[in-house]
Image (tube, rainbow, N blue to C red):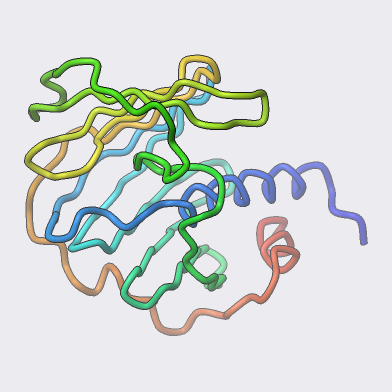
Amino acid sequence: MKPTRKVATALWGLCSLVLLVLAAPPAASGAEFSARMVVQDGAKTMPGKIYVQDGKMRQEFIDERGQTITIVRPDQKVVWVILPRQRSYMEMPLKIKLPGQFIQIPPQAMQKHSVGQERLNGYDTDKVQVSVPGAAGMEIQTFWVAKKLGLPIKMECRTRQFSLEYQNIKEEKVPDRWFNLPLGLQKLTSLAGFADRVEE
């Protein structure tokens, strides 16, 4: 059966988010914190939460389709995308060489150079600018790398009117259980399965 426009839009959003996560190199080893995450895509703003513990990441977003949780486990080389309301999840292999980025300087970045330093969200950062191959040619991306955390806390691409930022960062103990797959979920094997769940 051909998916409805609503389902197609949901799938596109899910695919975009998953690609960003799958493309992310692991967070800096040893970093442990929670933060508010804000994605700005043109006029659209999508707030969420991120939790980091020694390279593992958990992200939570809520939109009109409900809550989506993504858990990245570099130690197991796996990504889980969870729909709590539908009690289901998808499992995918973690690959770093896919296109995209998730507040990480892409491995294919070229012409990397420093453009200064800036205090951002309570952290001293090195401001780094890179050129990245994109669908419309080379694009300029800017990253704010927090020296203390050892990873970027903001990324901006003005040509695409896109930015991603960690705000209200709290260096605190993050529970181990937040990086584990909850019990009792149904495992889905395709995006079509996710489409069916989104439509429910």
